[in-house]
Image (cartoon, rainbow, N blue to C red; front, side, top):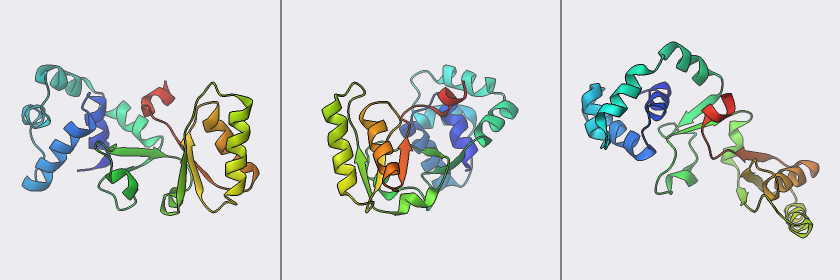
Length: 172
């Protein structure tokens, strides 16, 4: 099973857990299931809707969209081990930049988009005191997320920006 197939299943409306069910079937049986069987294996509430969405996908357009960003899947050795501890880890991660940063010790910074000046100063102080010993991981929203990235970069550190929404949102 390749990463594009995982992406296509997600675009067709499957959750990560539903995609895992199909991956498990593929690993155990060594074959790709039929579309109808995929809908059953995934446990789709509305199997017809999933199959219609899957059939309507324009593979040529979707492949071009998929190729716009590099990606790693949960089956790749580069996939961050920390995410495997989650109940429902993402099956695909899209990235741009240095994927090797995932191998280094990291600190996650989360906070409000509507933060106070004191909040921003607090994040800047914490990041400064880290002395670039950890890679800063945060969202790409304004507020605390942005402050964490800016502080790390100003200090010569490295950051990983995480988006919690679909790649398709970036492309539209």
